[in-house]
Length: 137
Image 1 (spheres, rainbow, N blue to C red):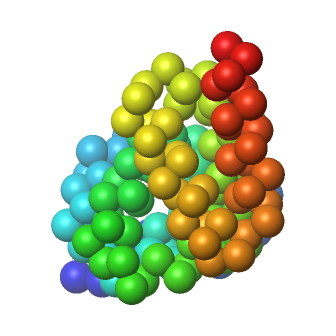
Image 2 (cartoon, one colour):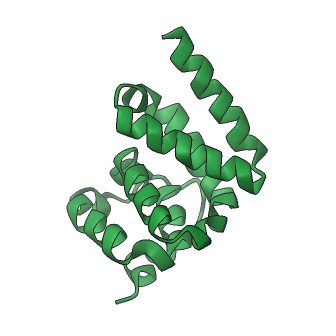
């Protein structure tokens, strides 16, 4: 099975943030991402940063990290515009939940650090905001 078909290989409008069909399928997509996602990071990140952001984030971030760790050579896609859009959505829409859950904060910081290593200045700014946010709370 090719995960790109399940995630629609979404390269659509970046402003689209919700597709209601996905909301009731979270458990199914979690299994798909964890079992089949290691060669399909582009499709996962594109979905999480657009039509699946409301249904899958912030919890999907942990699925993504687990998938990336299974296939570290494929983490180069964390340098994409879609990844930057995803970490921005995570910060602005979910930072309260992320900061209250140790695993989510570890996973968010892991993604940001990987993106920084690839050269993302946007990820650097978000990481500094997270560090400042955690210090002030």
